[in-house]
Picture 1: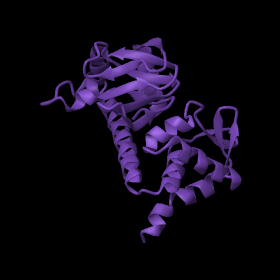
Picture 2 (picture 1 turned 135 degrees about the horizontal axis):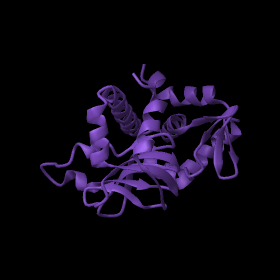
Picture 3 (picture 1 turned 30 degrees about the vertical axis):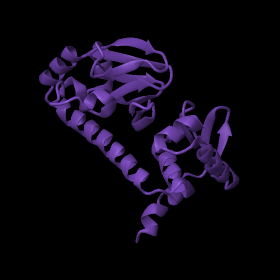
Picture 4 (picture 1 turned 90 degrees about the vertical axis):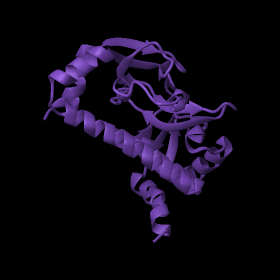
Length: 221
């Protein structure tokens, strides 16, 4: 079985390097471009926007993620449900784009790739399910702590949150007000758990942040 890095490298070789601007659509049911993507730089999201203009974010994609491969197979639905969903660039992005046909032909000719693809799909599903569960709890402090642990990436001696995760973006993700995010982040700063480095959030104490995020589980026992 090939490693994740090896699989991504092979997929990159199938694609064309492209840049997308913030708010460019990578996928929706009406979108004419039919590609899967390897995200190199930037931030993308699976989201929907209600008729009233309210955004709901279900999952983020960070550099190193494989984006948009499920629509390559799920090409039709019995109703219009999935017309509501889009994958959109939430920042300027650099991606390798691979046409659906090229991608499907590669998968068919490399049976060992199926396992990696299955594990990637399960990881995406698991992340979305955890996020939906976190939103049910109603504890904004715990939910934000959990989101920070979920979205953090290791960079040197610390974990960091991607610079495009503004407080407004985090508020959309959690379905709360930006002021609430600002207040909670201020509390976490006072506790010495996080700090700001330019536009980026740095996590100084991941162990403590994780413990705070797990209060949901502890409180229900």
